[in-house]
Amino acid sequence: MTGDSFRQSSEGGEKSAGNSFLGSRPEGRKGLGEMNPETLKETTMNPKTRSLMKVQVLDHKATGDTFDRLMGKDPKARFKFIQERAEYAELDI
Image (cartoon, rainbow, N blue to C red; front, top):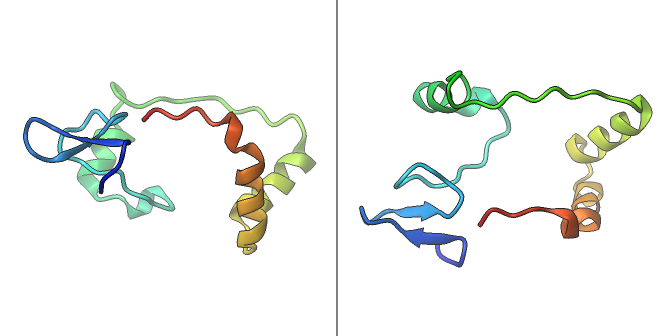
């Protein structure tokens, strides 16, 4: 991959500007079941490095509607949702 969001590490592999693992590449996944066991152990299951956040749902209807837009079968609705909120994204690149 090339572009402003990546730079060469001293070891010769690409490193994401926001990624602490040298030589690794960002990977897209749908769920934890798609991760290999080593990566899952290092990132998600390690109590020293994982982050847990409590989520409280205040408006169940609005939350359900948003979930349906993001996880539903209509990619146009998902794309529109993302476009409407793109200016609020905080990028670590």
